[in-house]
Length: 411
Image (cartoon, rainbow, N blue to C red; front, side, top):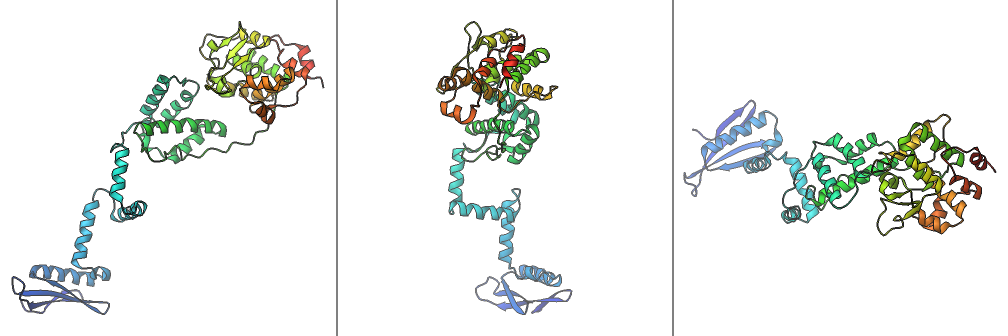
C-alpha cells in the first residue's frame, strides 16, 4: 500500500499516513488526517486496520455533512457507547444524566450513601399491594383496634375500591385521586371528609412499608376543597314540626335521625355513628356513641319527653340509629318537599342549641350537653329565640298540635 493513502467518500477526502516509530511493535504508526472548518485534525493508531476503519468513517461523516460528528475522536465515541450500555433497559441516556445531576446536587455528591440510607429505611424494597387489599387490611386493623368503621371508613373506602380496586396503591397519583374526589363528592364539605379518610389510609400504608416512609404521600398532596362560608340559620318550631311529620309519614327510616338532630343537637358524624344501645328511653338519656375520649364530646344528652315519644315510633331493630348518610337524606327530603322546608346547613344543631339556651337560660349546661364550650356557643351557635319558642320546640308531640304552631308564630 502506498502512502499517503487517500480515502474518498463523495467529494470528501481523508489521508492516511505511515511514519516510522521506534516504540511500536511494527516500527510504524499510522495517522488519519482530515480538515474540518479550516482546522487540520490528526488521529494516531498503531494498527493499520484500525486506522483504515477510522479513515473511512471520517470520510463518510464529512461527505454526509456530519461536521460535529467528525470532530469527535474514537475515545469519545467509545465512552458514549459505554454510557449507553450502562443505562440500557433503564431509560434514555440524557434523562438519566439529568436525574443524576439533580441527585448529585440534592445529596452534595453523596448519591450512593443517600440511596443506601433510603433503602435501609424502607427495608430495601417496597411491598406492593392493591387498593382493594389495602382497604381490607386497613379496616380490619381499625376494627381490631376497637374503631367503629361503619359510620366513617366504610362509607368512603368501599367506593375507592370500586374505582381503583385492582390498581397498586403506590401507582395512584394525586391528580387521579383529586379527579375521583371531584366526581364522586361534588359537595366541598363531603369531599374534604372523604379526603381525610383517604389520607389516613395512605399514612397507614406508609407505616406498613407499602409506601416510602420518608416521603409525602400522594394523598397528602390532594388539596382540600374550599368550603363556602356558611350563613348560620335555624329552623322555626313550625318548620321542625313539618320535618318530623314528613319523616314519619313518608320516610320513617329517617325519623330517628331527624328526632336526635333537633331534640339532641348531635353532630352529623355523631348521628351517623349513634347506636340504639346507647339510647335509653326509660331513663330519658342518650350516651353519644362516637364521642372521643377525654373531650367535651364524650357526654350524656337528655332526651325530652317529646323526643322519647317520637323515638318510640321508630324501628329500633338495627344496631345503628341512622342509615348511611341519614342526615343528608333528611335535608334532601326537606328541600324536595312541597312546599319546601327551609333547612340551612348545620341548621338542626344550631336550632337545638338556640332553643335549648332560650328554654333553660343556662349556656354552660347547654354547652356541656352539646360537647362545646360556652365561648363556642356564643361565637357560633346561639341565635335569638324567645323562651316561648324554646318551650314549644321541646314540646312537639307526634300528634301535631295547632297550639304549638301558633305559639311558634307568636312575635
